Amino acid sequence: MDRRAFLARTAAVAAVAAAGASAIPGVAWAGGAARFGAGAYVRPRPEAFADPTELTLAEAAWMIKNGKLSPAELVEAYLARIGAYEPAYQAFNTVLADQARAAAKAAGRRKHTGPLHGIPLAIKDNYWTAGVRTTANSYLFQDFVPPYDATAVARLKANGAIVLGKTQMGPLATTRATTPDGRVTTVNAWTPTIPGTDPGGSSTGTATSVAGRMATSGTGTQTGGSITAPSNAQNLTGLKPTMGRVSLAGIIPLSYTRDHPGPLARDAKDAAIMLTAMAGEDPADPRTQGLPRVPDLIEAATPVYSGRRLRARWSTRVGVLPGYADGTSATALARQAFLSTVDKIDGVRLVDVPLPDEWDLLTGNAFNNVRLPERSEPFMPYLRTDLRGFGVSVTGWLQGALLGANEFITGQRAKLLLLERVLDQIFDHCDVVVQTGPVPFDILGLPEIGFPIGFTPAGVPIGTILGGEPYAEDRLLSVVAAYQAVTDWHWRRPPNPPVAAGASALRSAAPAEDRGRLTAEDVAAQMQ
Image 1 (cartoon, rainbow, N blue to C red):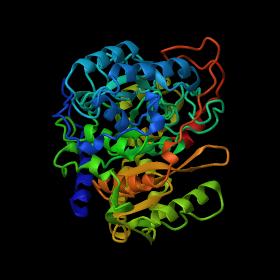
Image 2: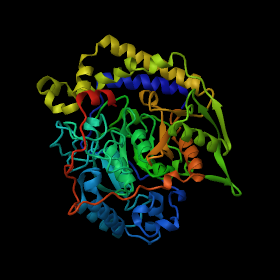
Image 3: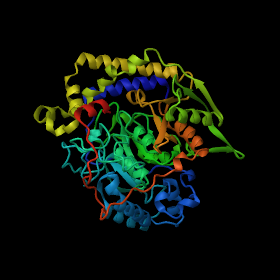
Image 4: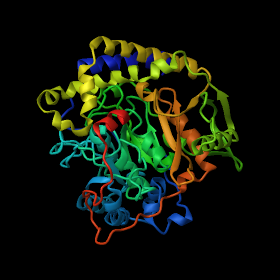
């Protein structure tokens, strides 16, 4: 799809949002089974054979396909870790132990269906799950039990995946995971005894569950960094696809023109497997219709060699924005090392890229805040009756309700101008571009991928983000796969947290200790 066509689609989606999204049908659309190539199965590293929870998704798929591991054994390994460490991590809202065991036994009796066959996943708690409470970690949905699965969940399950549980998240997908009244729950898996360390939000619980080896991979949503931020914070590879690549049907909304479902995984190959299953057209979501076909993401995430020498799958110009790696901080040094490593890969070339015209103005808060009416409009009945239902995140909904129509329209025009300038003034110079944060690619619906590039002296992960052109998830995966073929950051795992006496449970409970609290002012400052 050319850039102009994507620009036209973006304008059309904004019009659909203004008119109201199409109604969700009574049953989720799973579509046909996804097509996975042989590259989705990877022989495990020797050190991963001893512990099934150390296996990547692709490695676990190889083990199950070759009869070296049963789905039941894999599920039990993860449930054991959840029972031991969930009280420390607080990653889950709900653990579906009995259902997961039953699904694993059923998978063991069925013919092998693909790389997700028998794979245990963590699902963010704003994805509808049939018969299982879906709260978006809010008062408004605290008793909501959906009648069917979100389309993305239905697709994963249709391809053999097993839902281990629903994960903690920022209330209504706004910040790091807290209770609706702001009490911190989920910690960063790398510093479980230091709750002040940012675990990333709002897909916090999914990130912590995957980083803490309590799930193979998981799902998140991103409106303002909610996949890439927790992935960067917890040494994961998180892929936010292009707007429309994955259906929003059956996901509690935050902002219709900016919400993006996607995977949080351990490496590029796992992210590719997850997105292959999740992506595709859905009659219930007009954003998904009429798009280019999903490319072979598995192949894109498979490193390419000429003899023994690694090379890029495609000749790729990596754009470097001004100031990206300036300074001497741990983050700056990690970025410098990342650029140096990528520059040594055959077929990759670093190019300096200028910021588009009026960048600070078009990406600043004044225009970014035009997203707020989109989140307020569906919730106006609640805003008119009882503000307490929004808990600590109420400020953002009130701001959206009070924003004027003229400001909103001006913001939409500015968004299209920004998209045009990004496509023309950045991607005329490069194929992918480094970023210091999710803005503006979240605003524009362009794909981006977050992945690890180092650690601070205190042992906290450092990540970076690459952004791409519309529907260029394959290009992003190819660059990250090549980088991960020559680095080992993504293989590193956090040490196990201390286990409190008697703290063995297969359900999430309130933190035993005070982990701090976000105020309404904190939420307004951090809001996605």
